[in-house]
Amino acid sequence: MIDAAQARGKAQEYLQQFIPDFAALDPKVDEITLAPNSSTWTIGLYAYTGDQSQAATLAELLKFRRIRKVVVISAEDGSLLGISNPAPAALAS
Image (cartoon, rainbow, N blue to C red; front, side, top):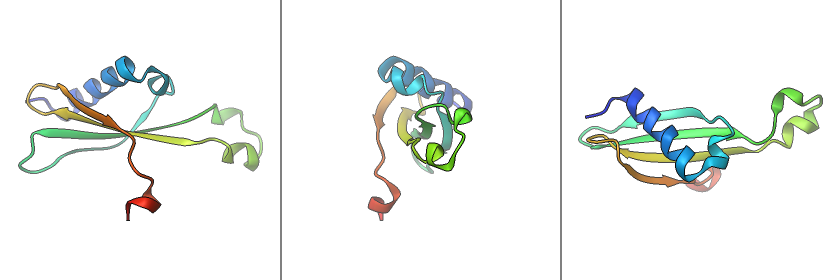
């Protein structure tokens, strides 16, 4: 059984392997869960397009887009079960 830190590391490895453009944006972990009675880790990650530190105006800040990915990993052996784009919050309800 892998722990949360190992699951996070595996998620980053899989993103680098399968979606290197997203991995290059240096994604941050938004959430990580192991549901009760489940054998899968679900890791939510996000990144912003562009370099926000260079933005000088509000208009420049608003042009950056937040991208999310969800990586699902087996808690037993760390194998990849899936990578997806979650539905936007407004559409999920």
